[in-house]
Length: 339
Image (cartoon, rainbow, N blue to C red; front, side, top):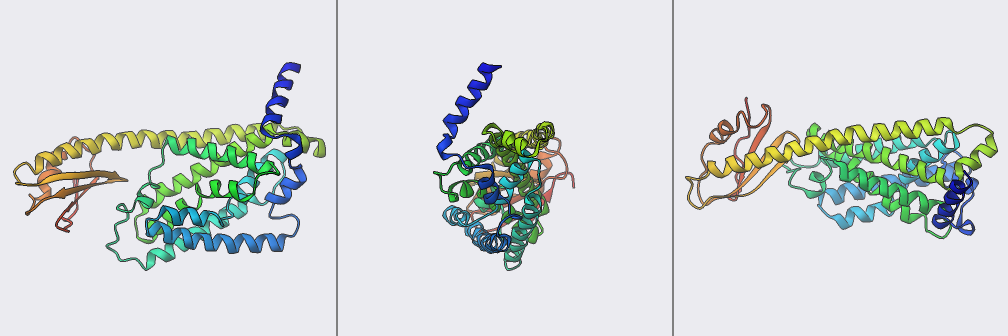
């Protein structure tokens, strides 16, 4: 027991030297929007969040990674998220859940507002900032957990600027919410659902990793000393978070694998479909949500899409849509497999 305690103390000192460790009161003042000068804290939170959502939505629509990252420098959504983790460790509410939900709703509404000025013909899946955030998988979970670990350690240290963990955490939260609003505003609710799943998975992973780090760095023990309450409830909460995070992402990873297999089948069928069209070639096939996008380079008219859909019946589940776009700037009428 003594050796285990010594090892934990040694690891804690390596991650967070005592001279650089924020006290529980300091960390609470940083992350709790319901304590201290609440009026100033909330004013800064809502102003910066609204502006960062506008910049992020514009960056997503412009397909500009630099603009999206720039928006995260001022995005304050990391504060309530890490506040949730701290509240679990302290077993005291910090208002983090309320501010995270209301803040997330604000970002979605701003995204919807941007979508309302887009033409109906706007190609959502042709935008890499959107397409990359509508199908979360296991790698997204790994990235979110690592981000939460780094963010929590940085917040606990006095020698790391607060903006650094904020940028890392916000990049996992604000852009997916902006994509939710943009897709929902365009009526693409399946894409919006995928982006929402990414946000929720990232949020839970961040809270989980933040909770583990804060507990490991001794804040749980400090909170118990102040309150005299046992930490069993925090342990149960961490276990529940781990389960909630894992199940949807494992399921989505399996779905992504199936979509990858089906995309390969569409690629093969599309190549056979244009065999009799001189000079035609398939440049790319993408599977997004319940649609397959087939991009064809051709100097002349293509065969009817119904022939391609007929070849796919039996190898692709019914209900998937096939959309063909040619290099001549023509998008053929979408067809539904089994429809």
